[in-house]
Structure formats: structure tokens, C-alpha cells
Length: 228
Image (spheres, rainbow, N blue to C red):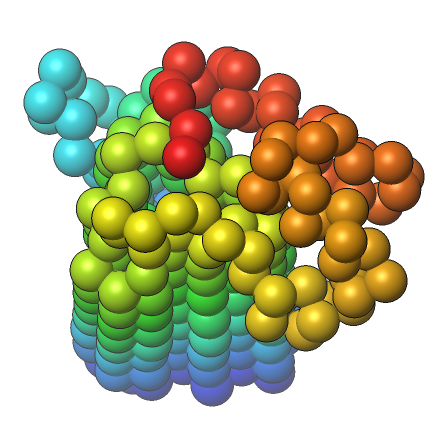
């Protein structure tokens, strides 16, 4: 561990754990390796990172070699749980994420950069939450689902299908464009074709948008799930 960290003396660290410099680990957190945490992270009190994934097929699986990777500049608030993979090699959290109070990140999850998980969000196993996505308060996500880049799901939404990039999912309403994220992340110049893609499925032309949609489509096809 870097000497340039602020780790509270009540924190429990076991196994192969690496913590990059500039990180703050607050009281009563539990970190279990194999675990790599990058630079400049804030991890709130009573957070548990590295417990075995909750899998009914094999609830007592050997998780001793199951890894978690967390990037840089994340804020992970109090009472968050981040669990080890059951099926793949890692559970991944990118950089610059904001994981708020009482969020559950399950086994084999992949959380992209710049994601926001609001208080009380619960993810099921093997989900992909792609870059810039936002899951609002109390949202729950079915296993193997894919939340597209810069999409948002409403407060209390139960997400049982994949959500396309730049979409806004509000239960019992038509899918709409997440124009807030379009502007926030600098895609305003392509808003007309983003709108056509989200609302009618028209393939985009701009290389920047094409790359986003292609990444999502690959994961969507592999998931075997429907989409909104």
C-alpha cells in the first residue's frame, strides 16, 4: 500500500490487496483480496469489498482467486457491497464513478467509467453498466442486463431488459432521449442522429456514435436479453 493514503485503523484488509496513492478508506470497511484499487479513491465507512458473490448454484464456491479491480478517482459511499466474480475473472469498476449509499455491486459485474449508481441501487449478477450511465434511486437491474452508455433509468425502476445508449427508461412511458447526458458528455453536435437512433432505431453515421452503438450491440447480443 502507498504511504500516501489515509486508512482508518478500524479498516480490515486481508489477502492480496493493492491500494493506489491518494486514497481514503473510512472506518469499519472490509477489503478482501485479490483486490486492486487505483489512485485517489474515497471508500466510505462500513463498505465491504471482496466478499464472495451470492450465487444460488454454488453458494460456497472458492473465491480465493476471484479478483476485483477498481480504477481511479471513484467515490464509493457508506454501506456499499462489491462482490467477487463467480464465473469470470473479475468484477470491475472503472474510474470516476459515484457509487452512493447502500448500493449492491454483484458478482461478475462490469461498471464503466463515469457511471452514477444512486442510493439503494441493486444490481444482479453479470450485468454491464456502460460508460456514463446513471441508475437513479432504488433502481433494480435483472441479471445479465446491459445498460447502454449515457443511458438513465428512473427512480424505482425494475430493469428487466437492456437499455440502449443515450436512452431514458421510465417505466410505463415511451423510451426518450437522455438529453442531459448528451450535453454533459459533449455529444450535442450529434443530437439529431442520437435522437433518430434512440426513437426509431436508425443507425448512426458519426464515427463517435457508431463506436458506442457497436460496443453496446455486441454486449446486447451476447446477453440474450430483449431491449427497451
